Image (cartoon, rainbow, N blue to C red; front, top):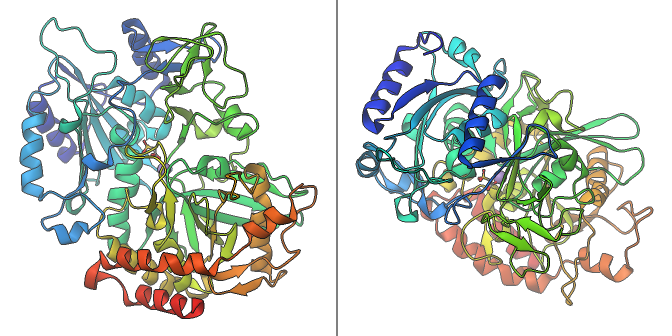
Length: 595
Ligand code: SAT
Ligand code: MN
């Protein structure tokens, strides 16, 4: 151990895990650059990583083709009873799941180094900070955690002798026999993968996957699943939301938190470059928001992460220039293609495909090949501070006061460009019924509509019905200080299948309308589904968009909305008696408005 650990519980837990997993050695991480460099050098030496000549201190990794995304089927929320996990989560009783996993963990780190990573989610000095300790046998995970969280001895110091930490145990599940050659991306077969959460104990056990949210346990596991359960107990919120600051030409600031399912453009919106004159945007977070009611009664948000783990394909100087500038250096690229001159490439990046690439399966790839060079869920890991428009306040301990919540998803039809809720309860209904067509971020069929309440389906650490109640309770506590709630759909298509809305920076036009709603500058138009922009209210200066497209974007198709009601009803029915009455009341009110 390179430093003293005064926390007895931590020392005991690490020892207990080492006895179970039987690693070759135990290494306590200090979060230093030297540590990062050493681990990367070692991974380059084995061939697990490729150093990218074109990007200083940046590396490419390729996962096993069976280990490319979060595995929702293998993700468990474990309580003594299934009722506590609710109908949207996979559940196995605590004792059974622990028994199964203990057998897997037994000796699983043989021949490997067991790394102990002390990390903080949110700035160490933030009243919202939570400290975690991740134990992992993956040096790739250590390096990613260096970027995505605040790793360091300061956490050990802050824990003192008896401070609370969230134990996060991770193993790739691939023990090495003496003399056995290691895989370039070790992992376990799918049926042995378990991403398990024990919210009653604030405990995370992950086994068998080295990829993203399965393995970087500070992210979805801690900052959403465990944190959402803590937040409910403690009266705050842990949400799957980006945070952004918009400043009007008059200098007025608006803070927006927006929830979309994975791979629906959250990172793009978080780094938006407004196309409307005089409006400026700053990024505070792209994936997760922790929010607490401040002394003034408003809701304050902080981003618990310190990096971006963004979807690479489709990211370009036109879709997201700020992300492109963020990943120039000190970045990790996973499942992207690599060029002959040592740069990365993916489908939808600015440059046309070069003649030759190494694809994400480490094979030679030739221009014109029918196969994708980068995996659709290929990712970059980059430090948030490298984002050119990162807000100077992104690490402010108390966070920023939220004015606007946005929900949304990918819908080719039915849902208009933007709708404001009539009030908080209606907004909670909008969040609870949010739906999206599925993407590559989750393993499963792409393109099916699934209800994804608050974009939290894969991330809610307790019964979703109780989570809905928690939203109502937070609204009651916030009262007149509650953020206003909007629903957007950037993805509506024409009958011919063309995008109706240009999206990206042009989305600032929609954000501006929201801010003007807050100021009472625009009246909007009341419809049965909520308040839409009245004619002429959306600032379209300098945008070429046909009247037809605009009408279709703003069209409230009453028949289509009526046709959605039975689906919502059966979705709500899943929650039985636990569904808050206020939510069924919203459904009935909508049904009446549509009649
Ligand atoms: O792999 S992660 O869960 O971290 C990314 C995502 O799906 O949003
Ligand atoms: Mn996400």
